[in-house]
Image (cartoon, rainbow, N blue to C red; front, side, top):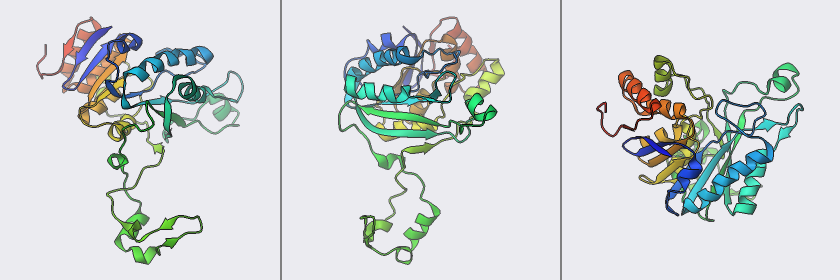
Amino acid sequence: MELTYETRKGQAYTGNSLDLLDFFEDNSINLVMTSPPFDLLRQKSYGNLNGDAYINWLTEFAVKIKDKLTEDGSFVLDLGGAYKRGVPIRNIYNYKVMIKFVEEIGYYLAEDFFWYNPSKLPSPIEWVNKRKIRAKDSVNTVWWFSKSENPKADVKKVLVPYSDRMKKLLKDGKKYYEAKERPSGHNISEGFNKDNGGAIPSNLLQIPNSESNSRYLKYCKKIGVKGHPARFPAKLPEFFIKYLTDPDDVVLDIFSGSNTTGEAAENLERRWISCDLNREFVASSVFRFCTDEEQANFYYHKIIKGEYVDLRSNTLV
């Protein structure tokens, strides 16, 4: 396990995060936000297992994480969908993971979220593009697990803009609704048109994964480095970091890849820790914290050689 680079708020490690988890004190991590390799039939460059082996592998991490979370801490896990080999039938591994974590490890499922990526390409090719017998798979399951029944959370931190209709209602409520009990049983009171600064978000998160001009990708292109093939958009970890933590809380990503979680945490003034097995992925993730191409190139090659990088100052050291 190697501390690879540090920033003003965080630390990036290279190695197996199972080993890293042993170094943390119990009850010390406020949020684990991560997206592991999925249970996919086709092998990916970043590695992935299949079937029961995959679930057992992921369970090893979950067991250790539970001890390290604060009593009001959360573990948010993004898992993509998959099909069984050779047939247009869904693999339900992501649901098996959720059930195992709750029934065997003792997590609570605080809420199930679904990340809809409208920019995702049609897949799987065989069933969607060629035979045209299935719709494209564009939703990931995002399980919000908690250590206790009452994890830290404040939905006021993640309010979304009001719809145009709601804006009209706020402007002149009496014109659009009458305070009374509806047929559904909901009681619409006089305070329904109070402006709370935004609407409560749903558990369907519509976030396109269409990053094209980020600092990370810009430096990957300029320095000739291949970007991580399975990045999630910054708005996904941003949502949960805002929702479930406070400034200076600790956010951990145990499968950090290009370290989107670390960058989001840094921007939101949270302390962060990231870990990935692949040195090249960790090296290129430093681009997220560099201010120019010279710095990005210098630090990347330093990390590739196994040297430590300190980004807490703006000087090249």
